[in-house]
Amino acid sequence: PSGEGGAVSYQLQVPDHIVPAILGRAGAVVKEMMEMSGATIKVSQKGEFAPGTNNRIITISGSQHQASYAHQLVSAKIPQM
Image 1: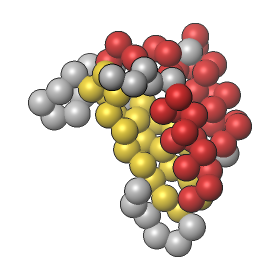
Image 2 (image 1 turned 180 degrees about the horizontal axis):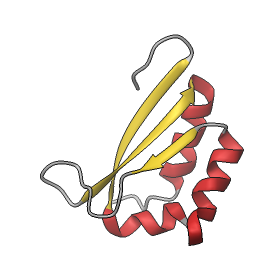
Image 3 (image 1 turned 90 degrees about the vertical axis):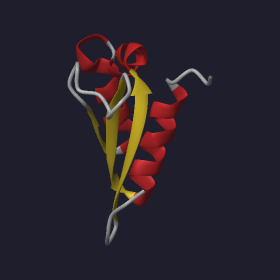
């Protein structure tokens, strides 16, 4: 995590085919995670990948507590390899 003061930011790389499970229909799932955690969750645009991968970038930001909770919520949607 990076940031200063009370704000932190996490970046996760998620395989492109997992992203729909995180976003939900019309963004419903990601909105619910943002409301539950209070953090901001941004997903890179379709076709916008981490360099050299097919992974989309998810950025989570908020207070330490909010971002940590949102990170747990997002991670729960990602199947463990």
